[in-house]
Image 1: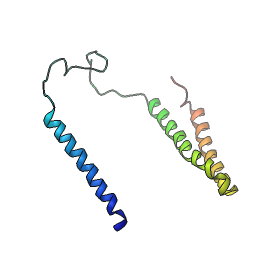
Image 2: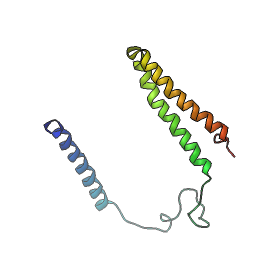
Image 3: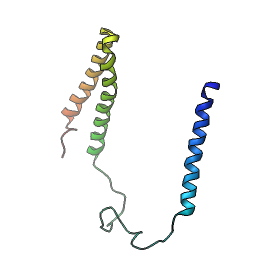
Image 4: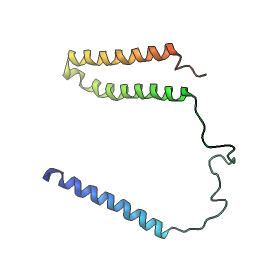
Length: 117
């Protein structure tokens, strides 16, 4: 526990600084509500209908494919730095991982997930 004591002290200071500075900012900020300030600001158009809109499942499928390839990049880049030291077993392990990801990509391609409709 003594090794993490410094980390705990810094974490308490960081959390305390954040809470205190947000509290001071809340106390000192001007509060002048105005109808213009309370109106929509994103696109300027008044919303029509409910906020509950169902998105097509294609959005989620593309997001999942993106996360899979992002995970590939996260594992592939550090692997390239140590593959010379790790040797051929590391190469074959990564080849298997890339093969599994490639099978997932082929499946997604054949199912039409990557085609925007």
